[in-house]
Length: 165
View 1 (cartoon, one colour):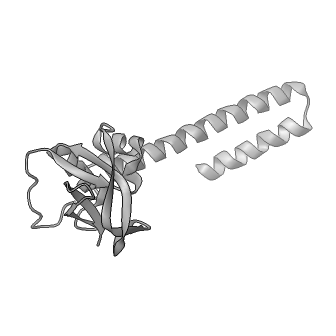
View 2 (cartoon, rainbow, N blue to C red; view 1 turned 180 degrees about the vertical axis):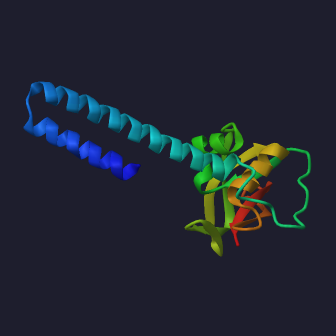
View 3 (cartoon, rainbow, N blue to C red; view 1 turned 60 degrees about the vertical axis):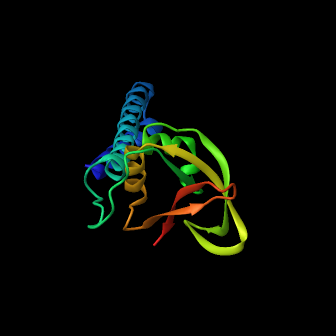
């Protein structure tokens, strides 16, 4: 299908270049329609991928033996992609209030934190519900890519932190 659309698009571009005005208008219209459908197709693929990764019941199952999440509010320290409000909105359904915080004794290295007694990792603390924490666990692939551990922040407050396995 994609190959046929590409060949058809190239044929219309040739018509646009080499033929008279009537053919040019028709070719331009067909090129516009093809480009529109290419863009719609790409957008649908991106949306499906996002749904499959973050919201679908497929693709991630927590490992056996994971403790249940307490039905209370939780504090989570975020230092990577979850610092962005739009990422939190996509993952949790709201951006939440992000309070600047520092995590002492660790430094950020790529997608994880590494123990370093002299470092303080900057980030944000967000307050989440139990269901939002479960969504964050799904996003971080808890037990597969990351572990969630309680750590003490620079201000003395405890918060969950995701650390790469």
